[in-house]
Amino acid sequence: MILVTGGAGFIGANFIFDWLSINNEAVINIDKLTYAGNLQTLNAIEGDGRHHFIRADIGNRALLSSLLAKHRPRAIINFAAESHVDRSIYGPDEFIQTNVVGTFNLLEAVRGHWSGLAKDEKTSFRFLHISTDEVYGSLAPDGAPFTETNRYEPNSPYSASKAASDHLVRAWHHTYGLPILTTNCSNNYGPYHFPEKLIPVVILNAIASKPLPIYGDGQQIRDWLYVKDHCSAIRRVLEAGKVGETYNVGGSNEKTNLDVVSTICTILDELQPRNDGRSYTEQITFVADRPGHDHRYAIDARKLERELDWRPTETFDTGIRKTVAWYLANQEWTDAVTTGSYRQWPGTHYGD
Ligand code: NAD
Ligand code: DAU
Image 1 (cartoon, helix red, strand yellow):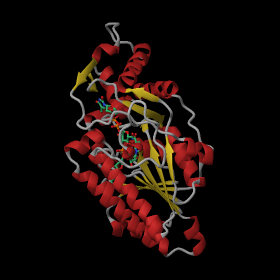
Image 2: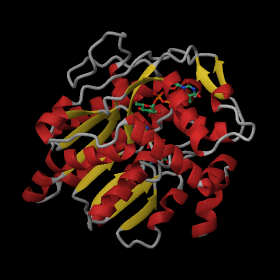
Image 3: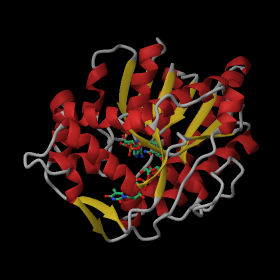
Image 4: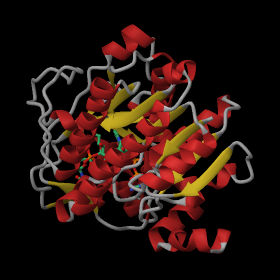
């Protein structure tokens, strides 16, 4: 079996769905269930004997050590993190606790477990760390996309904490020989994305007749990747990645924020027109910019393509249409998230 951390969050949950749709190998899912963790997201695999959920903090080394000894996973995929840049600006503490101290404790628990394995198990074991393109900092408009050898220049408390975790993972390989892999991915979007991030905020605000907030002039650029494509990249790196290596993952879909929001409005105009017949673009509202806002991210994913034969399957046009349609069709999930009722779900569903 494999062990996934942060599997009640956006990418972790999508990864588990993707994994179980093509694999019979069981998944242990360890998640602290912060505000971003949502067990309702996992309803689709309720009762599936291949999925085992355990509420735990990656910073709880003793508990993790006992879980590793009990379940003996052949691989760990570390998604668990505080992930929202704006929250990191208002309150960086949790970002340091989970992304830095938590990753450190997880690495120590894993190192203790891995050291005691028999030679063959030790060789085939993998620790795959999920990281972000934000560790490379901000690109000039004409700058070449980030490669794996770009200097780390994180600018926000979030990206600095992720950069620190990447360095710990790297050091645990170089010093102790832990068989690690790291992926640095661009902006994901798709089903179950928490509505604090741009794309779900815009879709849900639009249909609720609320303003669509664009920071600054909306000319910042992100490289968007449909979440299922990220999942396939992770599977591929786990399967065939070279131990100790880093792989950049991206969709080659550079868009300004204003373009992203306008595209969503156009799709909504078609799929769920406003009652007054006007365009959702009329709800666009320019608001104060994010402090220290990185201007541009772009990923050069040619290493992953060349060495592991991975390519994304969705373009931004196909992926964003699927995403908007998903949010329109999954009102129960979005209502539970926007009203906060999903936070009562573990108690309602599992009792104590
Ligand atoms: P998310 O915020 O949606 O989910 C994070 C999950 O981790 C939640 O379920 C949360 O409960 C859990 N968690 C938080 N702290 C924990 C702790 N101390 N112990 C155990 N579980 C904990 O995040 P996401 O968007 O799914 O991102 C997953 C990973 O991918 C993160 O490491 C993030 O840095 C990285 N990443 C995200 C993107 C993106 O666009 N969303 C892009 C590149 C990389
Ligand atoms: O690049 C990968 C990163 O992408 C991940 O590591 C992060 O976990 C993930 O949250 C994401 O970070 P961003 O800051 O790029 O994503 P966010 O959706 O918060 O913002 C996308 C862009 O849209 C960014 O330039 C800020 C802007 N924005 C965001 C929000 C929430 C707005 O203009 N208005 C908004 O309301």
